[in-house]
Image 1 (tube, rainbow, N blue to C red):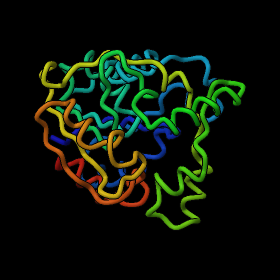
Image 2 (image 1 turned 180 degrees about the vertical axis):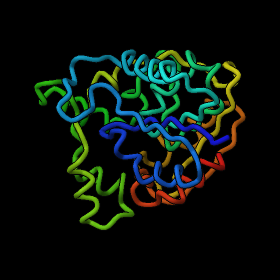
Image 3 (image 1 turned 90 degrees about the vertical axis):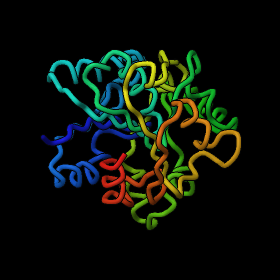
Image 4 (image 1 turned 135 degrees about the vertical axis):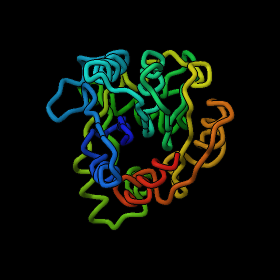
Length: 240
């Protein structure tokens, strides 16, 4: 029986950003669903939805298709809606995989989990946007998110990113350790991920620690290894 993956994208992304990885997983015989979450599709109204709506969308997607024995993967910001949805889908889930992802603490929004410089930049950009969205500056994306790609690739991928609703950064989700829900979990970290700086605000070890005693697996590449090292990332997700 083939494994079923539900892939949750990060901020500024969409289901399309999983395509290179999804292709590799399907070649391995897996069934793969790469979701396009509400408010971030091209042309969508970013002010229409809350983070709770995103969680509900994931739950409805899995329930309505009667998906079972699901491995759900969340990337970066996607760790927030992944965690919220897992608590309603525990009976349908085989495993949770957090890939270079935020693992929320109860009542704490993502904006409080990033370095102060990011918080200030995102707040200012949202205030100036006219629709409460954050557009990721190219300099940050190029040097900290996808630094392992050629310049033309960096520019192309950045041009495809979409503004992210600020409320998705400022609203918390209900949080529980997967072990409390009876769901196995693992944490995958990209070895060259510098999107969060070393130290207090780094992914490691604070986010895996919040999951409890779970495997931590390194995969090659940057925060955007879905573009730069998709075959290796797919193999890591299969092992995770």
